[in-house]
Length: 328
Image (tube, rainbow, N blue to C red; front, side):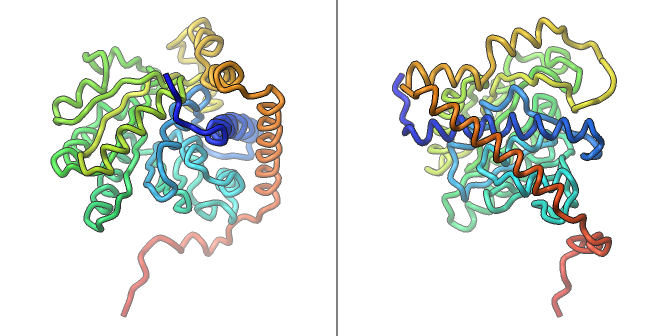
């Protein structure tokens, strides 16, 4: 199959995937050392579906994520310094140190926010799509949510609303097989979450979430449909997370085997698979990939240094951004 992406775009796909991987590697270590407080949910193993989807968007398109929140803005092109500073609760963070790991937002890349409330991003994304339509804009709204969120009432409400109003939205279910420790087979009788799309009269697409190109093609088709005024699409990316639901949880729930995790790591890793295609199908030199890798490592290290050197917010900041200003 012919891939309609330039060499620069293919290189950017790799750059963003390893940015997510290395950024979160660094975050896990900082969390282990007590420098990042609270929960930290990582996207190790899910980089392909994130980047494939985000690179089908324009910079001004909207994106809404979930509690597994660092990968999405990085996939949309966010700078690392502000994100890392936010994780370390610094004043220079994208939310001035008050959002933390699960509540990131970066309007500069269209990231409207990540949220710890399972499924709550779905109606937010529908609302953003409605706003774009009412303003006569050709922006689309992409929403990431997990298989656990697909069992929430907000899933039905948000997608049904988007469907009947033919809103320019793409709902992307990151089906990594588990809602914390509960397998999807225990919470849904349908084989695919995307099969539910028929109930809303919209297209439902299942895609290999470990194949960044396949996800990009599926989301690109949905974006084209949305911009043409033909309404939303429900896409299900079959993916996998290597680490626990949250990093350093401190307990072994024994809901999956080491063999299962290793099988995904060794044969279905999205970064390794794409690197192989870059060398074989897209004629990259190994040195070109190594240069991208080295530059990203420097970028991540710089973000950590920047964050640690940044001040904490002034205590008075607790009172800002709480209420809208009163206009006389």
